[in-house]
Length: 404
Image (cartoon, rainbow, N blue to C red; front, side, top):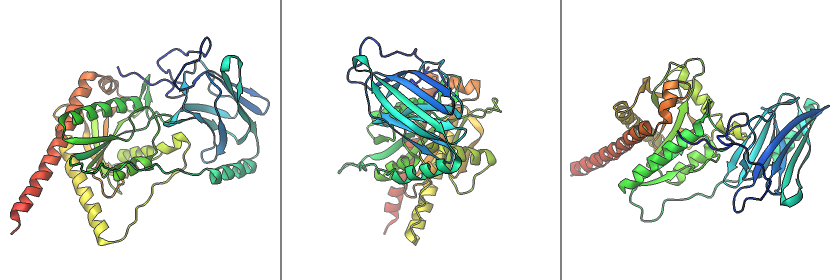
């Protein structure tokens, strides 16, 4: 079974016993957070955690949904499984990596509250203690503070990594969904973010072994990547194909199972597809990001043609992918569907989203963590990619021969 990353979601087992920072500090690794305590005293909720070192910390509030965001350097959360998860107006909290060098703790608020104090106090032996105090306030005061925080937060655009000069191989971008503070679907002790990362890494290894492809991962570790950044990576890399990988869940229908392939469409093929797209499009919210899909409204006949061509190529690959996967693994009864997925929105990059199966199905859950099943599925996706580019090369060659 795939190893589940430690601390993927507050309240769920992380796959290892908490390791308190006691005898010695870890060297050359992330600070370790343990011994979390959440308590209510009057109108104040206090959260504390022991840290293996003293680190800088910031905290602010955000509205709609109401929450408190605590940001600190990348941290290895090894919080005890029995730690209290709610108190007073704090209905729950979660934690995890936000970017490669930052971690976040997000506390959900049932009632308005502000940050009274946030600090990391130095303790004996070079250790630290994170201390956060939240005080209950009125709605208007909370909204005013949230507006200030929103105005002060400046979004930093990632530095684009472009295709190396002289590269002739096809570029395939693999996008393992969720990550870091956003675990995706969680069933029992299995987190979607871990399942899809393992699949993406296995697919990357297979494609690179052929020597025919340059493969880029939107994430190659347990960290968060926003939806806008995922789309931007595909465009910056001038991807010839973008494949987003997920694993669905239906709590009320454990008998529903099988893999599904999705393409982008303004109108969903059915209600289930629309619901799934809406859920995936809210992924940024798990990390405390307020974002909306960037509408790339570039006028002109050439852009319209590019969008149509991209949709056509996406459809061709999706149908081929369904055929190849269907010959190797169990597929959903409606294996090819479409909906308005933000992550598939690049107008110039053929893109598909694969739901590997339903984690809510005991049968699918067992397969998703099976090395044998993953090997078959990865091989099928690899074959579909090979066929897609082989057909493209053939069509280009036929067009060249037809020229006078």
